[in-house]
Amino acid sequence: MTATAVSVTIDELPDLEGATFGPSSWREITQDEVNLYAKVSGDDNPIHLDAEFAASTPFGTRIAHGLLTLSLVVPHMREIFKVTGVGMGINYGMNRVRFPAPVPVGARVRVHGHIKSVTDIGGGWQVEVPVTFEIEDVEKPACVAELVLRYYK
Image (cartoon, rainbow, N blue to C red):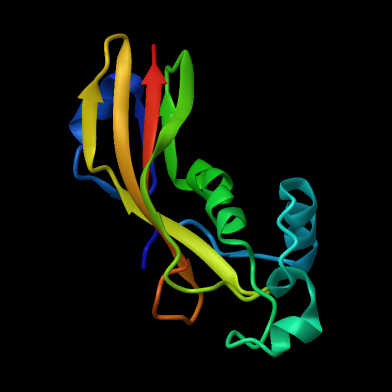
């Protein structure tokens, strides 16, 4: 898959409805990142942290937190989706999030997506952006999410 980046001004956003972007580059999820996320979030489920316990589960190994994987949307999107001329941009929320496949620690993920809709919100635009996190050499995605982003002039 050849990477396609979206880079537009805020005024060009409405013209992008239906456009696709990505994939981003691959990023390995390390045990150090998983440990830090567990510490910050308080999610100390042994499936993420205890190698012996994780080996006894159906996954057979430690896996990344789903929300850790989702949080990596920021650096991935920074590579492939850029809006300039913005006074302020915010993550307004998500319409839907699913984690179809676990991400084993040490696996690599990347993101691609498309612009589903662009809606005038008075002084800016709301953009619905479904994204998919792929796991290298795995058929099922790690995460599918519909981001709702807002860009203000």
